[in-house]
Image (tube, rainbow, N blue to C red; front, side, top):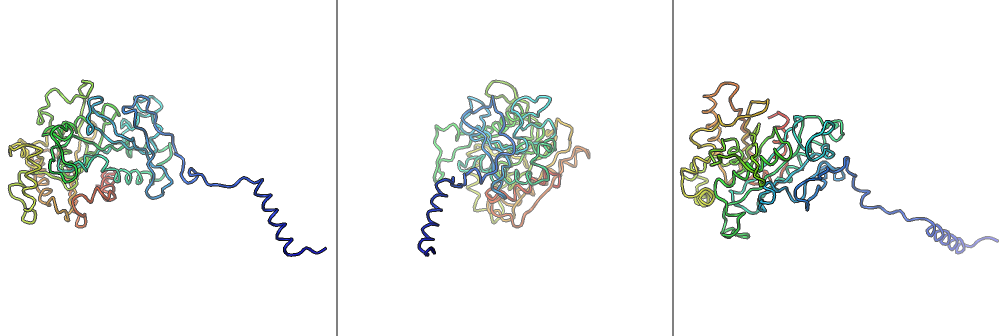
Length: 406
């Protein structure tokens, strides 16, 4: 007997019901869309800040690729004595994520360390020594871009490439801030020890953080970068500690004296190098900022203009360039000064004055002792903070410095 159309439909529906009853549904788990770590997270048996942890960093180009790890919560560089701003943020490339934290053994490198010749990149944020809205995590976009550039190098994600002298790790330093009682959304108050700092507190914190990184993570060679007042602090870190009334050495929270080696290169972005000179005679188009500059400089350094001049790298007297001594094989020092010509807060004259200072000092030095100075004037660099807010151009410049192309 011939089957009717309605009978065929009923039979097909019954077959579909039977198949669906015995067939396990196919579903996509969230993990299917994320590449598993190419290497296991670092082992951190004795790591400070046990509440933190390594979090994967995903490639902004291909979102399913892990390119590194960031330690969530930062490390206290004064241990139990640290305030909330005496911390350092750390990122490591994925190729070093299986390297054990602690002392090196014959078969594995110290976590993030540089005894194999790979340098660290260390950053100091800006914010006029007082802005609570700018901190060490302002470097995150730049750090991620640099990790991405490293990961996209041929073979960079394979364990066999770990010995390549590229980059051991990235650090960004927090430090105590000066008072900002008239901040529009987060005014400081007198009892806040994190926001009552006076010079030389800021540079003390930076040097302590550098010593902590060198003691705890084996950092040896490193490039020190800074934006705005962070560029000031980066060059201050090259000077003799005695300028900052440090006579017994930098000490950590355990009372140990820290060895603080100098950076092999300094990169300053839109830096402040001669505060007294700006306040005394600002360029005409920047004169509107004269009183604002005087306010934050007084808050950070006090009323004495002599202190301003002695603290700033382009006006310090006695001269300081000979104090910048390297303790490892590479003896040549380098400074890269990056200035946006669209910066509405910091005039290009700040960079030009810093260049002139180095040129005069280089005249007194032998050929092997001279500081190599590179100046990048960016006609399309954006306003003062744009370079770190975007992160891509800052990352590109720092990558070229690490590669030796700048």
